[in-house]
Image (cartoon, rainbow, N blue to C red):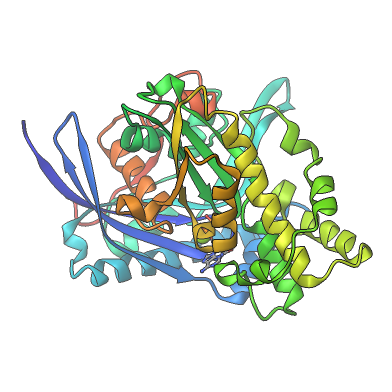
Length: 394
Ligand SMILES: Nc1ncnc2c1ncn2[C@@H]1O[C@H](COP(=O)(O)OP(=O)(O)O)[C@@H](O)[C@H]1O
Ligand SMILES: [Mg+2]
């Protein structure tokens, strides 16, 4: 069988708005099998000003169309810079790279339809223009994945489970992959799962509320709870936690999805004021809000332990580094289930989603379907992604 080796750069910027992640992967394609090796990874943090600007254009009430338009172009410059840096970091040149695959930055996502002139319309918007990336790097660039899935009735998310299924399904036991970004989500892979047996959805906040609390508790000095140290120094306020767990989203049946719209700054602010009112100390607030993330993730996973024969939970995303969060996930699982970091599978927790977007872009270029209808609710499998051709291919 013919074997093709190529290098692909994946780019991802998530709901945390912390920066852009880039992963350079080596793909070995033998037609019926894709082998993926992570060559190198980097994260380019956004400046304070950029984060603030992005937060603004993610907030429909204050977003201005002129800012959205210019940020679409500006972010693409940053993404191009990240692409060129990672190629250099790997001691390669742009000529060596087959493809850049960019998720972009989501600034709006509305999977529930609204009615416009009698038609049901869903929509999503990712910025960081791929034409600019293709021009700056000279490399063919794929992006704008989500709209194609929506065009066939899907929610445009989650997209990662397609690759989770391809790469991590195990014949002898079930697995759950958890990604803890701004929002946390799970992919349930029952033992030997077929594509239609995969279950994937958002469980609620990941780091988003923790980040906001840490920022307020430290008067803006810190943006996140490094290694979960602040949470570890506090005590979970069980009474307040019980109240927080009553929030409707946590009792909605799966599949469900959420974002900054629900668990963003406004929501965090309400909880913060509640804690203030209850005279809960800063450490205990952060401990409790961290427990909220752990509990809501664990509660969802526990639903599948028996039916999907789950023996392993694999954690990725920046939240993997929050050790208080990570340890409490293990506490909520039975002894039969081991909780491990993504690095156990030779992909760092931070790089995982980015690696997967590289794979989704590769499939697009090869004209292969790359959505998972069981996860997005789409009527059929489609080839997601739009292509901006690079200068190097003529
Ligand atoms: N060393 C660390 N300790 C604790 N939390 C961390 C650490 N590194 C990253 N994080 C958390 O991970 C978040 C970023 O996660 P990421 O997976 O990039 O999310 P997103 O996909 O939403 O951008 C940060 O905002 C922070 O809360
Ligand atoms: Mg991020």
